[in-house]
Image (cartoon, rainbow, N blue to C red; front, side, top):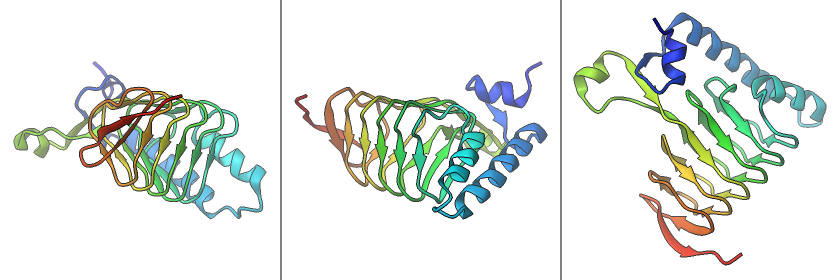
Length: 186
């Protein structure tokens, strides 16, 4: 029989209130509390805390505090990834971010979702879908990226967008829902 964590990582319905998952979220919250209150003039301490919270963060990953996530261990980044203030990553499943991608303030990345059926939703079970963001992507402020979305290399997502579907390489996309506005020549 699968544990709730195994179900979560497999994209199946799972109970987030499970003891193991709750303990892992509490550990992440303690690390976020340390990170978010660490003075900016202590960059080595900030790096150390961030490496513990996001063990698969690439070289040069920088997240401007405050920052929030569920677990941290499901976030995997390439080199030189940058997040501005007040970003949230609900990482019940893998969130893969390519090198040199940048995120404006208040970006929300959600792998977590809930059943549409009210009876299923009342069971307190949820599920997650992985998110993949390519290399050299720029995500404007106040963007929401929904579960299961893939954003292609060199794409630009306009501020305030809600990304509900995959976005290909080399496009500027914006809106709610986010739509391709134009091709970007490289």
